[in-house]
Image (cartoon, rainbow, N blue to C red; front, side, top):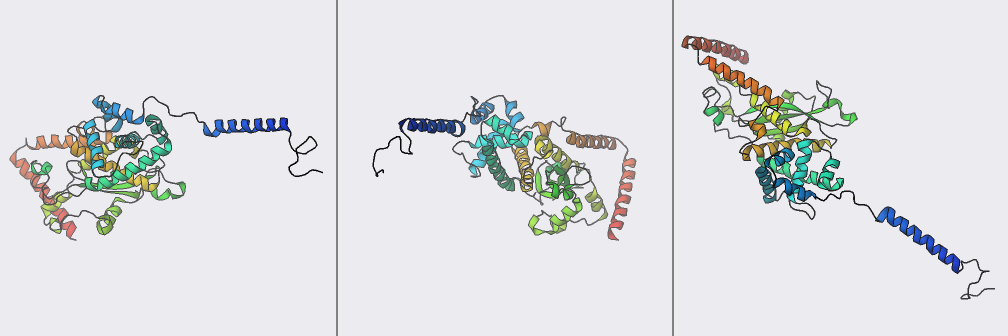
Length: 373
């Protein structure tokens, strides 16, 4: 009979001293194994150059490096970051400076890189990369409200005012409007509305631009199958879209004005804008699998950055040199043909010019009568 507190012996069913040592060894082994598997992790991203150091190296390096990597010149990049700080849209975090946050964002939209690639380049986790991508996207979209604004309707654009080809015939023209299809990544069960004439799923984006190639109005997110006229009608009649309609007194009041109103020789500026936009931001050509709302905001952010660069860059390859941009090249060829036609027009006789003017008036009169029916 054993008593509580009696010393253990070999006849007890409890462990003796040797068994205690063996149990302790098992526990120790289990702790070491757990530590190696779950507590001690080998660093994954251990590059000698951190993300911030990489950005600083680029900003202090050759001019072309910043442009090639972040799609804008160094001065414009620094100014862009400064504006985001000044307006308190972004701020330095514990681990990332504003410059690094913006650089990561531009690296994604400017090269259509996946977050795993960006995480490796800037030495952060994919979760950190995704988090700050969304933060910068939100900040740039807020800034875009100030960057994408309607024109002044009472001011004749200088591109028209000082060009005898257009003035005074187009003095009331304030911009060019058109739609373009942007790549969209859509869940399978929602793809039908986003398929237009082509196989790919797209969103139809309607834009208005000024004649200095700045976007003045952007509506993104419509399904690719949506007709341009339907989008324009909805935007013009629905107050929620805040469509920048010109004053009522700008409606055409005669056959010549109607002819000029329908003339499209200035329209290629919107094609040039689309070409520059897509060339600078390849993400618009092959959209990754973001949420549809995020994809819509990416388009708006790209248009806002486009305007910022156009306003603040003294020179820009995409705006100044169009040889590498197929979409812009087409519009440039059209513009060149018009210029050649102008030179021919000024070399012909006055009688021929008068005859051409009569033909124009006949066409304008025909359009005017058809419009009044």
